[in-house]
Length: 499
Image (cartoon, rainbow, N blue to C red; front, side):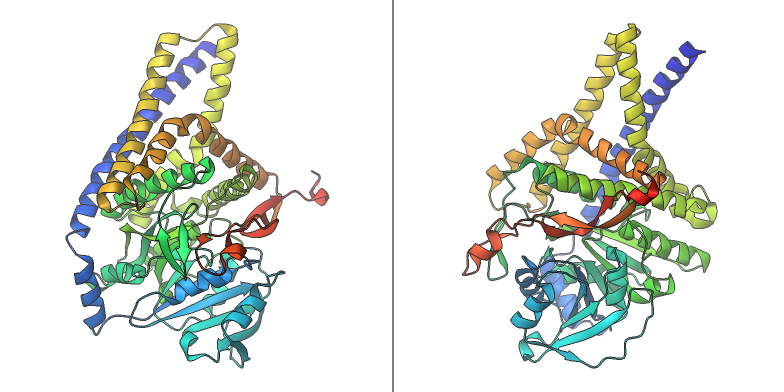
């Protein structure tokens, strides 16, 4: 019986790995086809069409902020420099305990104004609304509300104020390309079935800014955000873009995504208790369209629209990925009825099965495989020739994918100012399977475990350095600031739950 289980698991791993690699090859081809079709439109044509079309909709940028006093002024200044015919910026102060709200009031001449706040979607209680007395900031709105414990609750608080038919969900610590809204609204003008558009994201660690403008694009010297930058490129430029080609996207990143406001509200808004609010929201939107027979499409933009500050320490990376792992298992339980359900079309028959098999189960399968290998080594039952062949095949395939993504990013116009900066990514791609990926597997499993035993999540601490600046506030923005709470949930085990 034991030998049968060993053989069965060996064959399972072989076909599982083969299926994953086949899927990646398919996604590579699909992503190339999609980007080739999209890139036939020049940026000047896109801007001209959006500026002149009578059907160009207004866009609300909703950005939650929780204890962001270090970066909030610089990043709001960057948002204000966005180029688009008609837009507003809704900053949601989600019960910050630091000087986030005070900094906004002081730097942007904000005053409290009377407002009839309507709860179109659920969120924690609204406190007050601020607008600026300075004409220069006329499209800036600040919502002050009680802390809801999740980003989803904060976004819902902004949605109740947003006035335009489309909104962009982003983080206040994100830096957006000035023409990002042009890029994301353009597909909407071409296809009225589009309910969401995802913009490609990258890491801002290592960048330099001056007066809200990025003046130097370069990778971080810290390996943690460097590995994550490579991971982001692989996710957006292959995964999401490949699924976009066949309209089977299962996620629009919470860092930067454009959504149909009415569809989001009709679907019930963001799940206020969700730890994977971005994936949960898109699932709810697509399920709503399937339930009511509405055609829908979700697309990925190949050009970088957003840069975000990634974790720079293992402790912060751990909190982020434990939360993501917790959110993924929560999502699988919450929307289990969608899995392999033909009623939900590509969502139920393609997107969710892939998420379940190759994203949710992957850390579990890898952990069991590691335990099996350790056992076989001690019992002398491992076939080393077969082991090394499979090991090098999977490793070489992983490195090949990474190198392809780096080359593709370079051909697309590049994330970095200088070509030599790509060497760091090339080296990261070689070491990622040994140095970074095992940590991600461990943190994901920890998130699964925390969810299963019922631990509670709360806002936690993160040291934010901000993007290095070259102006008068350089000292403030680039200095290390201890123990600033991050815009993410961290896991806290409560004694009352028996742990």
